[in-house]
View 1 (tube, one colour):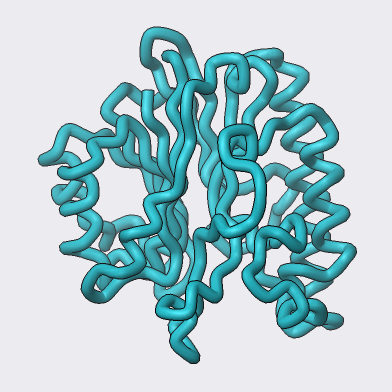
View 2 (view 1 turned 90 degrees about the vertical axis):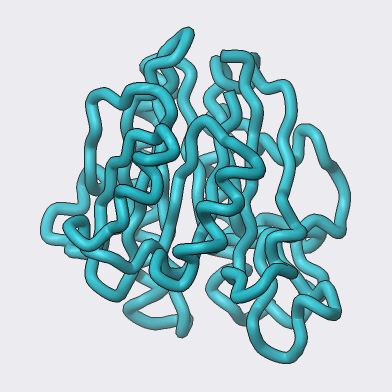
Length: 259
């Protein structure tokens, strides 16, 4: 089973590129972030016509996450537990029913800039709620993954120019420590298992020719529970998507599990 995560930076802007990518790569499950669309306006037909079941947790103009799956989806849940009163659509999860059940969680973690400040406080509080949900997923002792735009650069090797990010919320010590606390619970960074070392990125800013200079960062991650990590056969980043016409500033990150 091939599972991909992709921050599309607006479903309307990617209405042609995304279906083309789906037709080429044929992932079984896709976790989308920044759909920037309320549920009722999401173009479901584009994906249902391709054999995908569609579940969304949308928001007008901002944020929004979705799950596309060629397999049935059960037990869909919207909103990160503990975020009562939080109207930002950043989390959706469901069980994919293939040869075996896989719990998939799509997330769009807050950016947190400017830091320090209220937005950074919100980011760290959101990550603490994420850690609590991660503990619950581990306690279930079943295959599960949390994937999406984490807005965290885990290590210096995950940035072409780490010095340029020293004062950014994506790379501040508190952000990286919060990410490590989640990983240290027992999760596996699926991409790093297969691709160690520098030079691997999933985001290039639209400004200052970042793509042409390969001035990227790796902020889109797939974290696997031990039961899912045992099923991992491959992982990768579809870097070439960034060079296409009217691209997102992110590219898809994917894993293959023996399911």
